[in-house]
Length: 294
Image (cartoon, rainbow, N blue to C red; front, side, top):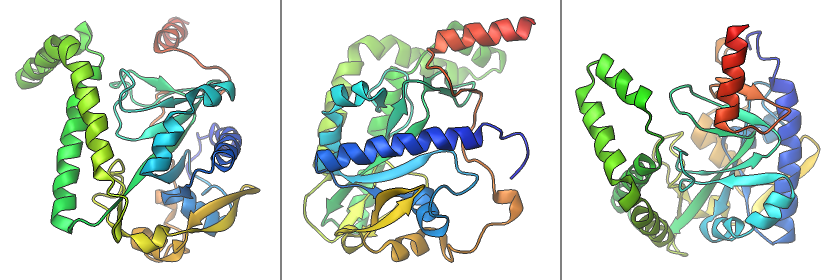
């Protein structure tokens, strides 16, 4: 891992406490979850964080995920909050459980801030064939795309930049979305929530993370998630998929083998990080503007 990631260790310490809050919340409300992706790998290979990892990933069954979204008041009381694809300005398909006391702005061209986060992906159980699942993913991805477009922050500078770069197609596209934004936002939100609910059939031999595109189209055997195994993550007792070995081999192959040195890097961009305060996008811009003048 390269030098210059001094934020990583304190960020992981904050994330550990966030995981403790999440696990406690799930246990008190009888919600099922499993560590996913690199977080699951970290639990097995490192008993905690992969040393260069900068977030946490979990899966939840669709019904439990929906229940989690109703617990916002309790989550806020723990100095956390949820960001979902219907949060204005947010641009991902999955939900984030964020700390209210930290601030991250990942990419300059995507002006949206959130706290250090746990990525939460819903898992839908289905009995459909792979072709139908693929079609569902395509339709759902397009529905999310449309909704994100009406939630997007369209600024004068972004339009000016497209004109300067002679990106006329992008200029016209964004202008169209800006015009229909007030009319379509609630319509698309209701349609998207309804569509996501229909993806979960509550029966079948497959599990699909429709909101997780990090590894491309994924279709898992239901038996991998039919129950769980306990493990330790930074001293916290957590849940892994029942057949976590098969799951990890599916994603990473020989997952106990460390990657080459050049690949041991955090996976997220960090245009701005503040691990001591929760700030709005305007507050971040103001501070960065003052720093640039010094």
